[in-house]
Amino acid sequence: MYSYKELAELAGYTARVSDLLDTMDEVEAGKFQKQLVSSASTEENAKGQVVESADIRFDNVPIVSPNGDVLIKALSFEVKRGENLVVQGPNGCGKSSLFRILGGLWPVYGGTVYKPSSREFTYIPQRPYLTTGTLRDQLIYPQNRGEFLACGKTDQDLYVILQQLQMTQMVEKEGGFDAQREWRDTLSGGDKQKIAMARLFYHRPQYAILDESSSAVPLEVEKVMYEQAMGNLQYHSRLLEFDGQGGYVFAELDASRRLALQEERQALERKLQDVPKLQARLAELEERKKL
Image (cartoon, rainbow, N blue to C red; front, side):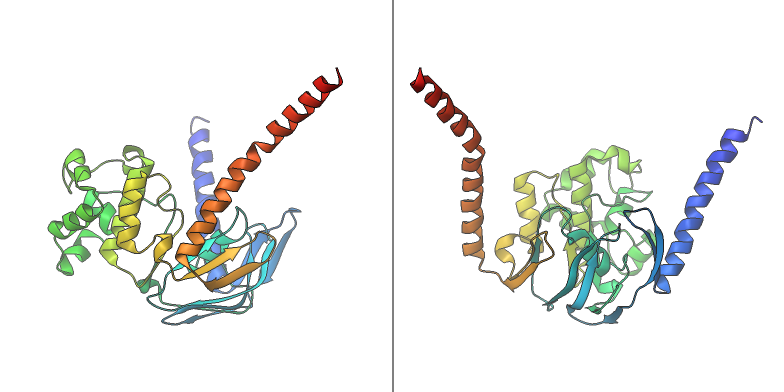
């Protein structure tokens, strides 16, 4: 009787872990079970294939949302090593689903995905995972201290990376690389994103997906981060833009023209926001004119 609450909590944790392990086995076998919007549970075989390649290429790959909606029927694009691609589009258009497929977290329902091995590929989300351990462990994740030392790295190497990102004050603030904290509670959203960017600089993968990975950092720090990682719009050579209606554009990116068009669009949107007020004022003047 006294242990009922603890047993109920343990049962809940056990069920979640069991579901996670079962799902991972199914995804590895190319079988994915999803919950549709209608709440009807169905099973579908992932008919697409993933091929290891030096470049990234999607060949007629459908982009499907977690609730089963087909966002894009057949997506095709290619990014070669050394090129930079910016992915744009409204919320819910398929950007996150695309990233999940690239990261191996989502099944391929059709077509062929060509991508490098996981060792040459990294995904930096908006809310990065923070492991237990020291500040050093946060920066070298998923490596551990033994692997860190085995590859000949030192804390000085980490300090140089933090200098590039203007983050050395974090080491002093937290009490050195050996400091241990409950990092998910200790660090602010911006500091967590800086940690994730430092990991990118430390591991130096061939490809990296930056999924709104600087949304919580100041603009001047964001500029430094993206200039170092070649992530600013002006450094991209290609554009993949979703329209939110199932269509997309994949084209060469004229950075100066693109930035000019973005500025013009933002100016027009600001003016359009004033249209309802102007219309209301015009109607008011018309009514006074009748009087």
